[in-house]
Length: 245
Ligand SMILES: Nc1ncnc2c1ncn2[C@@H]1O[C@H](COP(=O)(O)OP(=O)(O)OP(=O)(O)O)[C@@H](O)[C@H]1O
Ligand SMILES: [Mg+2]
Image (tube, rainbow, N blue to C red; front, side):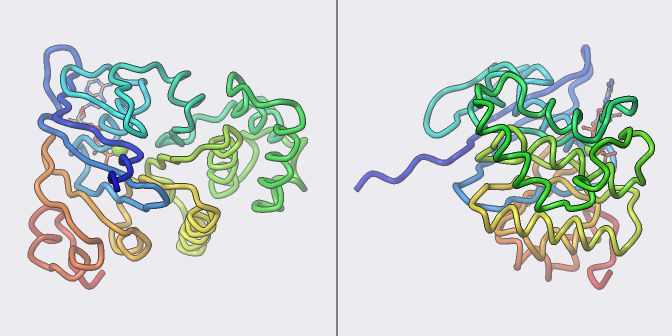
């Protein structure tokens, strides 16, 4: 029997800002229902890699395939329509719009019918009851944690098969960090694959199946998350963190 194609496979990506190359020889895969972590120090190139996967940052070279189909150079609209959605670092909400309208923006151009949009909205409001309570409140007046819920909810409104999360716990208080990881676990249980970049390395490796470690624009290690998690030399060499933290 032929092996199922990987959900997402990038091969030998190279990425630049102008003439400055910030990532090279990036190859990675995400399988169906898998949780894959991308970790590394500040400025390693994680966000640029994630943005390139969904057509927000141009690819200088290399290829991307999705469910066995070559999608190299696809647009962000094509990625979302196909089921690959990025929840960006820094949330990028519309602060002067209501919570409900920010969420609804996530379903624009996805081809979802009104009934599907209503069903997704109700599923997301079940996942984040506070967003239902505050549906008419302006997004910019919410706390940081609530704004992160809106950002994740908006990404889920597109009905993704692969959710890419860039630093979802950044700047949140410890209790809210835990809540974000609980939410990611719930999303995984619903069958959605997750690719997650996070500074919170230990908590991320605890929920991930596999992980890639980036340093200065290269992937320098990869493997089972459970093994990387207990590799103090690796964690301190590439991320400057104490493996016990
Ligand atoms: N808009 C930009 N223009 C020019 N250079 C940029 C831009 N955005 C990022 N860079 C540079 O590209 C490199 C990779 O940045 P990137 O944001 O992808 O890293 P990161 O691993 O996500 O970092 P962080 O942990 O801070 O989120 C860094 O050297 C950064 O300074
Ligand atoms: Mg980043």
